[in-house]
Picture 1 (spheres, rainbow, N blue to C red):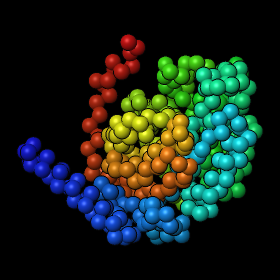
Picture 2: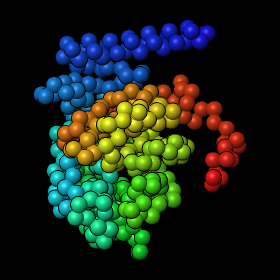
Picture 3: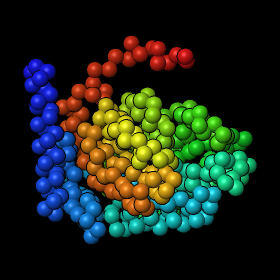
Picture 4: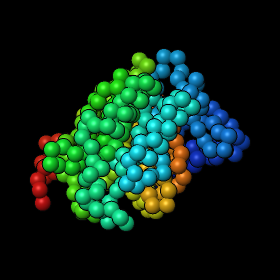
Length: 339
């Protein structure tokens, strides 16, 4: 197939998919919409927005599927108690009304993205709100995870001895702390936050309702560095969860495209949970391994949920050309050198 033929074929496929989705949504249709070869069971909710079916219909017999929810909540910056209460209410809603099995909360959920440059905020005050792991808020959400029998990713300013981290804790359906991911890439505009960089990536083996999947976590700016998602892919991630706090996803379209590329080039599902409201502006996303946007948030507080089909992901890997296909690690030595 020559290049012109490839371009025409790709264009026709894109137009065909787009027209099918537009026609289905315009007609108020529900059913199995194929996005880039991956199934998304979609229908309109009472507000006219697309959702992925009721909890009782979330799983086909024998299918390997998991329902993920990205909680796009309004922050109460610098008010841990208010954030804990709001997050707990939204987690409960995601499970009881949407059937979510994996729930992702925004970056530093406990305090909001409390920056010393904010009004009435200082580095000393942000550090006073930091907690250890385990600690009060982590223990609270561990109990909630056990009660609801789900996985929860909870973000906080973590205090460990004399160091402070931007951290996300993975809590299991048994109420266990499976692990803590510490943000590796602290960018120059965050240097005043006083965080220590994390030094490793990790993927956790998870199982819920008899379905196994591998979960990786990145935090916000990690997404800007391709090596972060690629490390998680090499470690076997099926899903990459991204707690986030930035207005870039709303204001700068390429930041949405960037997340699509991370999913596409690594052949993984991505679920990103951002803060709602006028500062960070929402636009949370759930993205398929083909780079298609399954769910895209508004600026308002909301719960985005989708069923992720792990059987379709396996087939995508088998037929794919990206991800772990064709890697030549022996040629990547310069990536390990500091410039």
